[in-house]
Length: 511
Image (tube, rainbow, N blue to C red):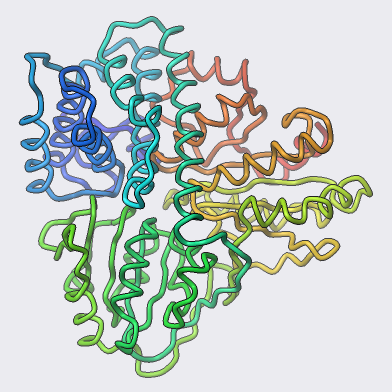
């Protein structure tokens, strides 16, 4: 076995990648990421809690998320940086977790992978100047605990605490984003591309987009979001730039086809970067924790001049180019965060009471390349006309170009934002439960989620911490969840795998 990795939904044969990652990472890269994770656990056990060590833990964990860093050289440099701050003889090898009893391995994996997701959100908040002491301290606590010989019950408690801390971290990031860039408001976004030079910005980082917009104003270079950057169009301090024109393409897994020979520069601010094809490798740039061999990396100075110069050199399309979403639509509507939705809560409540809205579905999460993800397109298409669809993260690209119409002036499809904006969905659910004087589980609300990488894991843990029941998860269940741990989730939270849209809708609506 050259490597072992089973942290993403596409893991080989639903068991684990042992030769090369399905994501494209080589065995050497995977083993370096394991070494980095081991060093981070040693750091958590040995080092004092301070801003420098906390940043190493957060950025190190983020580096090991699926489709973030494929560059061995930069990972080795990060390992050396961590090693310098380890000041005791504590040694740990992550392989000891992979070799555990399968239930212990399963629970420790849920904690570790969930923690990686929390690290991503903490990173985005920190670059905007926001942090939380409970969140920061938990990185030390969780990494210390998974290195210990704990019982299944002790680990299950830590699984739920990971969900609790992630809720706090998502709230922090929501505050950071809105206080820095304004409250998101509904906005229509085109998928068509204007002629002339342009830059495609992908990933999740609002600050990187903001800095690029400022550096490109009056340069004759247009900016287009991609993937999880789409919700950025809803923020007033970002959409005030007239050269933020629209959204290019669909979700991350289609990039090798959509970026093929595109006459534009491409900036990756976070995951998901896929193995870069020769047809566009000369125009890919990375920044922050994202790195890829032989690609130009923009450092901490955030001087995007090389990106801008490449866009001008390539020149863009000679004529305006019509592009569409997966279903043929060319207009996407964003900006339905919790503040916007709750501002019309009285209309939603009245529509539910009158029977005009009979059900609310949250359909969202990570998209991916595995066959069967058209389930989510079909589910939304088959959902009753008297239902509303809340969505978030890149899974929405399966249906976000559909026109589902309105109910009493309320759009049937409400895009709540990026994956971390699951916080918005939670806020809305909690407020509706208060209005109806019932629990969230008693609302006419159902969650149908897709997952791919570790940020989806921490969101799932948050929902479990909140006691949300009857979640449907797909397209497959995580390989790192053992049968016994799955039974706990089924018995306590009634979590179930998706089947077919027709059968799942029938079960949900007859519940």
